[in-house]
Length: 89
Image 1 (spheres, rainbow, N blue to C red):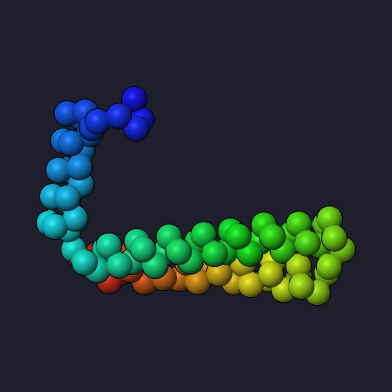
Image 2: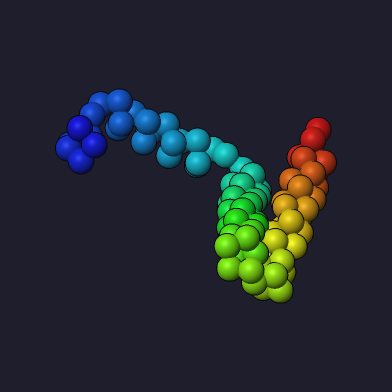
């Protein structure tokens, strides 16, 4: 049951997640959080911009959002590659 009391498997998963977060590197967690937020913002910008252009005919605002979203994807790729190079040993 989703909203019932936690099962033993859920409690074990929570303990494993807590242990992984404590033992993991803060740099990795920070990079993951930054990339997740940037990627979601880029997806949102491209999606909303595309809908504004297609359905409303708002080429200026929609086009700007699409371009900003595509630039956001580029930033995500650059940040990920920089993180990969920095952590590669």
